[in-house]
Length: 88
Image (cartoon, rainbow, N blue to C red; front, side, top):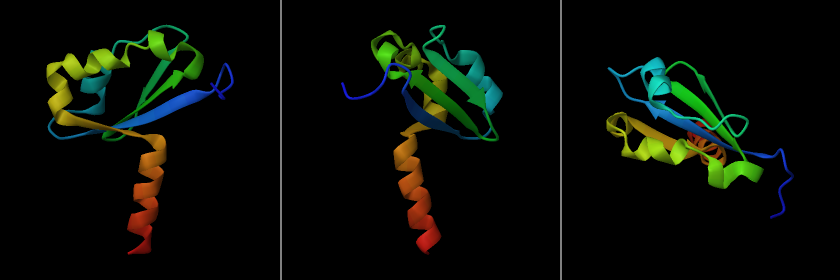
């Protein structure tokens, strides 16, 4: 692995109404010192330390009922999508 011990893998979960970011936050399980989450407006920012990627509990979110009301994208993908929309 080329990443450093504290490098992060970052994701953004886009939340569909009527669900709120705080509703999603309540459903997310985290592994202490590995997973980090923060609610934004209609999004939830999630990151995992690369060194603890196999210990992350974010994968459990896929099995939750709330998963049908969100879509999760890698941060790099979100940046590329933003660049495409700015070209319009």
